[in-house]
Image (tube, rainbow, N blue to C red):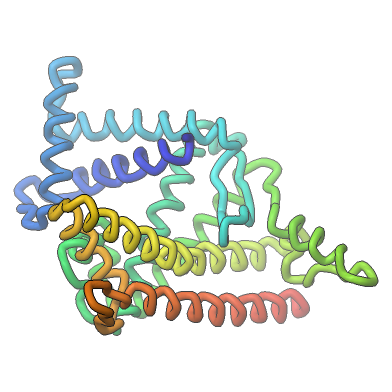
Length: 305
C-alpha cells in the first residue's frame, strides 16, 4: 500500500515541478500533458479559496505538501531503496541534514533520475531518433532540458547526476545497509567448502568513490530492467483492454508500447502483436550483458584500489 501511494505521489510532484518550470504561456499540445494540466488546474482551483495565492505559489505549497506525504510514507518503509531485480541493493535511512523532508527530496531525486535514464535508454533504443508517439513527447517534456541534449552530453549528465545522488545518500544517510551483499554471502555459504561471495559485492568494504560508482551504475542499469517489466505489464493490460472493449485505454497502451519497443519491427501472429515479447528478450539480453560487464569493471577496480 505504501509503495502504491509513492507511485501516485511521485508523478504529482513531477507534474508540479514541470508546471513551475514551464513558461507562463507555454501551449501543451500533447493530449496526455494537457489532460494532466487540466487536472492540476482543477486541484489549484479547489485549494485557491483557502490559501488565496497565485498559481505558482500554490504549486510550491502543493509540492511541499507532496514531499511531506512522501516523507511520512518513507519513514514507514525505512527510507529510500535502490532495488535491482526485486532485491534491495542499499537502503538510505534519513539522519541529520537530510531529516524527514530531505528524505522525501532524495527519494524524488531517485525517481527523476530513473526518468532521465529511461529517456536516454529509449533514445538509444530508437537509434538516436525522436521518441515516437504522444508518450515519447510527454517523456521528453517531463525530462527537459536534459532530453534536448545530444546523446553523449545527456549520458555524461545522467552519470554525474547519478553519482551525485549516491554521494549525497552516502554522506547524509545513517546506517546505510546493503541487503544485496548479505544475500550474496548467504548464497555463497551454501556451496561446498563455504565459498565466499565475489569481492565486488562487499560494497561496504569498498572506498567511498568506488562505492558511489558501483551504486550509481546499478541505479542506471536498473532502469533497463524496469523498462522490461513495464513492457510486460502494458502488454497484459492491452490484452485486458481488448477483452473489455475500452478503445481509449487500448490507444494509450499501444502508444506506450510503441515507445518501449523502440526500433523492434511489428511481429504479428493473427490479432496478437508479439513485438513487445521480442523487445523484452532484447532488453533482457542487453541487461545481462551490460550488467555483467559493469560488475567485471567494478571487480577490476576493487582489486586496484
